[in-house]
Length: 417
Ligand code: ADP
Ligand code: ASP
Ligand code: MG
Image (cartoon, rainbow, N blue to C red; front, side):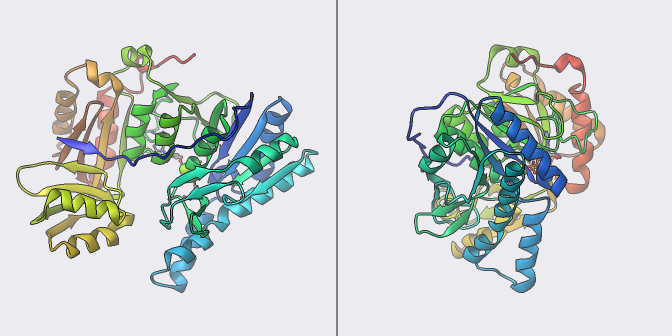
């Protein structure tokens, strides 16, 4: 038996009644990668505004700017202090946000850019992966009332101790959803470099198919198991606050993927909605500690434990590679006997229809056997089967399963109203 551990999501009270026609539009790094693209985003925002909406835009840092800033920090210091790292990397989003506001003004529309702090995003004090505890949206409401487009720097907030914090990689998605919840927005649109959520990462499976609709539960499993297109926490937030998400392309006008409550058609049409993978997890094998004590110490660290596999013998769990130092420190402190396997990737087969269609596990393992692959650890939930294989075998497993479940065929297509 296994479980995927999700973080609790705080209550975010909207401080005013919802306004009709509020739209939150979030643009990822590739969408604002150069001046030309920034001007295109500005044009899109102005069009949304002129169509009558109250428009709030959340932008990510330009292109690889966040990675560059992280690398720069490590060139200067082998172990940058988390507080200072947050001061540094929050800058990327401020740059893009100010530039988009300038481009909007050039189009004759009033706009204002705000840092996360100015926008009222209040977080806890955990640098590098802070959680939003409150959204004080008064300033955004005022600016919207003044007929402006409001640009908010994604991925950041201000802690209850008045320090600048960041929300973890991909965190601009979370900023956008939190604002959509707090503002009572009609929808939160996530503009990115692919057309929506696909049956597998389109960069690995070129004939992967775009899904029209995905339930919150499926999207949670997909995000938790490597479908980078939405940050996990943003999906948790959306589910808990009923925010409708629309993942779509920055570069076309086409409709993308809606993430909403599960409906009948989702269950009937397709058993499997996708095959996801991640290479960014380490698996730990631990002995000699109390299970409850271990997971409580990891939670305090804080380490985002992903999959826990329960066996009669050792405790097995996975955690992100970026939490490796904290994990090792906790295990040593508890005096555990442990080792880590970091050459493994995780592949997950996900679908709400699994609940009502037996035989998915059989087909998954038969496919792996035919590919000559031996899964090393297996974890399941009612809508997921996940297993670990060596890094080099991940791509073959994803492609093989995508084909075995006929995910490219139009048969598996879902309708969305
Ligand atoms: P952004 O900068 O817009 O936030 P990200 O790079 O964070 O974009 O996320 C988009 C990327 O997610 C895509 O380019 C794609 O390679 C990857 N991806 C992984 N799995 C999936 C999937 N199942 N569907 C769509 N995209 C996926
Ligand atoms: N710029 C941040 C990152 O690269 C946040 C984001 O893009 O959502 O992770
Ligand atoms: Mg992203």
